Image (cartoon, rainbow, N blue to C red):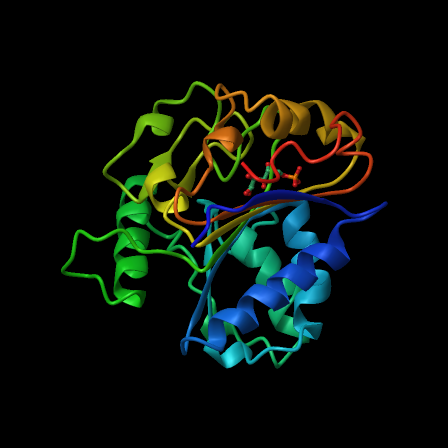
Length: 249
Ligand SMILES: O=C(O)[C@H](O)[C@@H](O)[C@H](O)[C@H](O)COP(=O)(O)O
């Protein structure tokens, strides 16, 4: 696959473009294989996906939805990303069943939760007995105000993790402190990494990531060598970027 990087500007909101690309990648994948394996994030992207995912024209029974990161809190906690998807999406839409989600077991301590989730992912990909890195069909990632993505934060030792696919963090600068996160080896083996950025507050970071390619920022380190890298940004979030500096890279 050509290493395609691009940024799409979407006017005042990213939801239609983000959901449209999700539907496109899901159905392109399902035209070639019987499973679409997706990783989703929390924060504002969870709100967008919970609002519109149910309405996509796709066979959700063939989807498997994992979490790029998760806060290690009870599912009923307002901070639980799976809890948000369960309450705001699954509860109201029978066509998006709970059975297609693979939540983190947050009843475990953070270290065991990470190891357990890595086993869960390996099993879903049929790679329990392999050292091969699973390749997600699509990862939908957010960008934090400090340039973090998933739960990979600037300057954190996890950025150098090259063995674990899922790692624990117990000192997240973004509360809550205990989380598990996909690491760069897993993220960068995806077929498509799709970032969503909305609002003026993301403009400086998005410029440093997309235009400056500032590698001090974890989001800039997401660059799948054999996959696609796509940013979906509203006009305000992309307001400090001239043209599309990624196109053709
Ligand atoms: O659960 C989380 O905290 C996220 O996965 C995190 O990486 C998020 O995507 C960014 O912090 C951006 O959040 P916003 O899109 O809400 O700004």
